[in-house]
Length: 486
Ligand SMILES: Nc1ncnc2c1ncn2[C@@H]1O[C@H](COP(=O)(O)OP(=O)(O)OP(=O)(O)O)[C@@H](O)[C@H]1O
Ligand SMILES: [Mg+2]
Image (cartoon, rainbow, N blue to C red):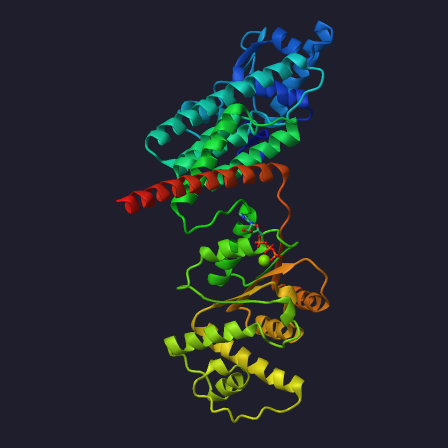
């Protein structure tokens, strides 16, 4: 028995026993689709629907021809005319459609893969085209109602992840439907994901601004302000956490790179690049806040402009931290390495007697120190991965840069670098970046200035936080006064 399957949600497709059926021209497909939905129709109506501009006898002749083409495409009597004046789908042939599946199961949310007959257009057949649009809207309405029903059920159950999912499905159907965005923002807020809700608002503003040149509706703006208030209140209650705004994409990028490194998928260092004061340090700190020192050793250091001529100076902090790790975790390192490092960084080892004579030639001396440091980092990182954090790498001396480069390239699986850098030209740094890029070991995260809308939000949010803190201070001062007057 032949199995005919017709797909009308999204792009039209029809198969017989899994073989695709092709119709010779659009009006043949239009006739087939119309009959699949309506099952039966008079010849007169069909002729008027598809050939409105033709004389009646020509239109009917065209219709006969189209019916013939459909039967020929299937090589079956899919259409019959028990009464001469009408045409109908042969009820003795089984035809399955996605529309029937969708309509017969009230809970079905998977069959609607796109709007009814997406992109299908028939020239010179206005009434037919109106029918397509009306039918499209009809099915869309059914699907939308089902999603909305599900949203209200899952909202009752506090199943916020499901609510978010359904809202996103609604937004996919109509990217300008602000009600769906509001529902999504509310759900994210209730699910303690206020930052995500802010992100959704920004996406909506961007789409509305770009496509329609309008702003979000007052109700959406009001909700957005409530969410900002909520964030500020949270910031107030967590006094230790400093005010941080936006940079969601950048944080996501840093977190993704870290997870890949931790899970051994890929190890790529990240250079946070941008003009002075753009927020490089703030972003780096926010990112480090979310990382547990149990999973990884974080070795941080900063570079300063006046130290650019002091070779290997910024490694001092790293050496100190390393020495502490080695002592507390009992990692054993070769005595020769220990002595070489201690000859240059005396804090590294208490055992160092001070009589190791390094070769006088400076470059060779630094090379030996560099190798020893590299060896120690390798040994420590084989116990637990290491993240080196260099602040303001534009001021790192060239010897340190080449040491960093060789460590990162030779031990890239277990050591990565996160660094901040001003976007000023620097020859040594340029060489470092070129070398790292050649081996695909570096991603540059360029921080841009906040957009106009973001700046407005920043001010609002910061203002609310400040007010909140002030209120807290007032209460605190009042309490102090109470205590003292007592
Ligand atoms: N995302 C943010 N949220 C809140 N405050 C921020 C944010 N980004 C930057 N700031 C504030 O702006 C100021 C400058 O930021 P930051 O010190 O991070 O800039 P930078 O790019 O590291 O500058 P430099 O090149 O001078 O080191 C700081 O007071 C910081 O608290
Ligand atoms: Mg900085």
